[in-house]
Amino acid sequence: MKAPHDLYIASAAAWVPGTRPLGEAVAAGLVDEEHRGLGYESIAVAEGVSGPEMAVRAGRLALERAGSDGHEVGLVLHSSCGYQGHDMWPTASYVANGTVGRAAAGFDVQQRCNAGLGTLWLAAGQIAAGFTDAVLLTTGDQFAPPWVDRWNVQLNFIFADGGSALLLSRRSGFARVVSLCVGADNSLERWNRGLEPFGTAPGRELPLRLRERGVQHAVTPEAEGSWQRFEAGLLGTTARALDDAGVTTEDISRVVVPHIHRGESPENYELLGFAEKQSTWDLGRRVGHMGAGDQFLGLEHLVAQRSVGPGDLVLLVAAGEGFSFSAAVVEILDTPDWQ
Image (cartoon, rainbow, N blue to C red; front, top):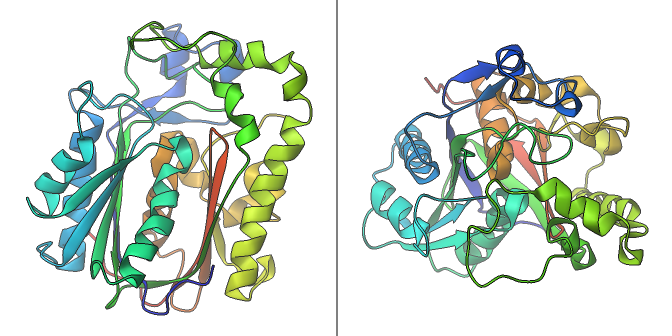
């Protein structure tokens, strides 16, 4: 859909812990053969700080960069891919209270790696409807043992820890959201469920066995044509966002896609028609795949590095298990001086 004319990104921020060189992790026997050649140089690994705490740090930085005390924020949407430090606990309430205060409504969104960018679409509707003048979007995850083996848990990527945030406003910002779209192919959800029966309590798998679930599903008739359906969903959602913005890939200066490696298949930026130098893989190879936070982190990186300027269009694309997809076209209006 075309975004409301008065939908702006007031600021972007991220809190990323120190990185661990991949070679060091390999030498320690943590990385299997399959994950050593994915192109990562290092991975962000947090010690002693949880996903929600990283989200609060990123959210506070976003407010600081916008010169806001949070009073205009009526909604906080928090996204995550995994464990948030407590069972059966409303993480978004903690994040909201730690950033904009006690009165803002907080909701958790957990559509895996599509959740962060997906909240941009959800927030746009709330701003357009007049519910609030501003929405804070946050992500935060720590992929720590024994819950998950970050190095080998899934094909084609290594998980990174970190928090990220966007502050949306109907009033002003360094960028304007031109268009945004979501899509889905729910027939693909079993790739992350496998063939095991439903359980009645958490903790049956420590660590998680996501790859094994995919192997189980891969031999079923239902799995036939999955890759083609995935590509159709990703490309179709992106094409609608470009069409709604009235632009083509040739008009896009930079693209932010999930920081994953697709092995022998075309990389996501290549699949969408872009060169590596137009992507944020220069960042992704140094931090890893930050789950729901790659898009917010990538946009912050482009702005902070002065890789984009006024008039440039940035395409943000996300995909998450399920499978769901999001795409947005953002026009840079100003280059803020973020420290």
